[in-house]
Length: 171
Image (cartoon, rainbow, N blue to C red; front, side, top):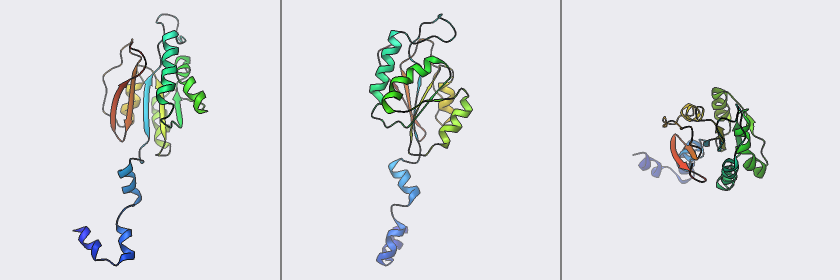
């Protein structure tokens, strides 16, 4: 019905009722919601203290992350104050020329991601207990818990849809 009415309008008025209305353009091209990629920090040896560094497998996984996400267009990286999350994001951040934002609070991280421009791509590096909270806080469905030995899960959230992928070698 609406298209029939638009066809009856004189030529200069037709374009105002069709594409690209800004909100329709966003829905069509998917540029209204930020791309969020969430991972758990890379491999660490258990029992080596409260804030262990990455082991050799973790360093290799951090390099794999750099190769996997180097061309995605990430514009912001959020890490926690623990060195294992910072060391996981370091190779990618140095390649992209970004300095990771250190944020320990899940609620503050969710608020910061939501405050970013809608066309951004964000990497969140967290822990087995914070990554599910971050994802659900950003509007995704709940995910299965991340086990203690699981370091290869890569979660991609786009417009409320969640994809669970794997990267690097098997854990």
